[in-house]
Image (cartoon, rainbow, N blue to C red):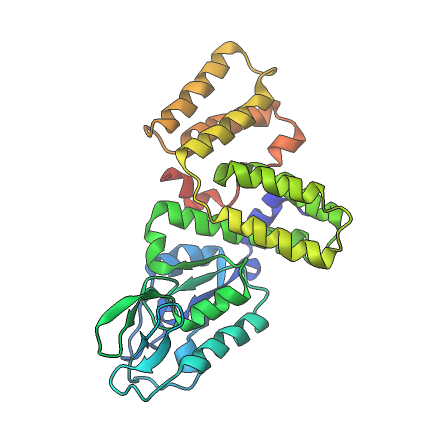
Length: 329
């Protein structure tokens, strides 16, 4: 079985093995918007494309709306809005957009993530304007295709392109994509309880950094699930794991995780080295340096003194370092 570092090297060096990720077609520069334009994302195309194999999709075009076309907007109850024509409210594409999301999910179970267009009545993940029938804004909701997709695939990492400008949200999304990719490579093809245990063991500190409570709860769940049928265990475990990883890892939780990992070195390094590590972690906790600083020092000592278990932790290298994600959090 390939270990996680091998998977990262494969993604990094072999374009044909890039991670499959769905994306709103307009973000790749395709002129599919209602006005015949696009919303080309430089970050998606010039950075993430080294790791991601994009599968573009525009639900509005897929259901037969033309280019250009009358724009649509969400109208009615924010929890269950309709998608109506802005100029001609008799144009109702609510059901086609919902069914498009359901069909897409059914045909794209191989995806490891999805990047959506912000504010779109079809693709917006959240905070999409919902209007009263009189034309006044009346709340916020989710685009109908996006909601159907997320309801059908609750484990799938989903994010809006605009929110990837936030360093913490960006790192969180990409980490979840790589985690799901690891699952699909190591567990999904021929699942066994032992493989799930191995996967969980290697992701323990990743989980701890996001939620200590979730780390403990998922560990207990797996310990008690040894006799559970795999068809019941797998979706429950995966939904819980990906749900926990949605929680953003902050400086406090990262500090706790770094100190736990440092514990594996307590009998191997001298007092001066321990103090150097503690000082670096404390600088990070105070916000004086980014996560890459204490992690680099910690990994230096782990390479020399760490055992196979701790050096195999995904937390240490969850994605290609060329992305520079830990240089900003």
